[in-house]
Image (cartoon, rainbow, N blue to C red; front, top):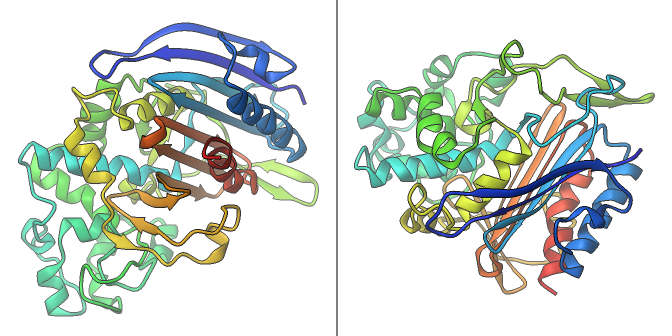
Length: 387
């Protein structure tokens, strides 16, 4: 398969609006020649690695972007939105971000705290009347910070089965008093989707605006993320969607777009294009201070809890021990650098994002035909640039 690549350079100062200075899209071979200016050798090597891996893995459709020094230095799109359709992925094709959505939740909560809407230390029971857990002490002590750092104390993945059964979030929250508790709030890491997504009703009750509207007003619109949205995609308004695919004995098969996990919007409900992700990375690296000030970036990059991850989550990384979670972000201390990271999976989609403040670099990857390339994307890049 020929790789269809879009190479874009976007120059941004830390005080200015992004200004796209060049966009081109052609079928090219080799990939690295597509850059408006020659890529540094390590980045060119990574682009060539991606071209080979996308082809050899039979990926249906994908997109990736590299941000460095205030610029989107490379954006690549590959393959089809739906296998056999002839409709190619472009820089504005929407993918589901799955758990990469959590990073938006952490930033939004930090912005609302800065505006004085609430404190991350506020107790959930005070903001969500009627909230009850199995243990009265945990009910009283649970904070917003605990929700967003997976330190609620509940057993991991509480009621994900109800999420997958498409039950409404409010209905699931009403049953949280049935869930076993393994520790008091703030002591242990236990990954959650339902608890994390309590940010949705809390934000709405404290602002009078829906979570979807808050994302649009405080993140998507100010940062110029013109394709991004939260919740089910209206295909009549925007048909440029990468369809989900599953692997069978005969190869990847397209599925109809589904609404799984949109009922936990903060945890897994954001859709975005690779163009959007480049702008998001620039903001996270400090190049949109008007909208994402250093106080917010400091909040999300400060470790809250140690995360003892199973080996399969980091099997493509060189061995390291320092792994933490913050507000919707994983923090890895890797080869002497702090790497902010998150991955996401939902049926038919994979997404990956990472940025390294010390190196002023960030990357994102999305695909509509899950395979292990997604797991190798971030560590392969970091191993190159941190040598």
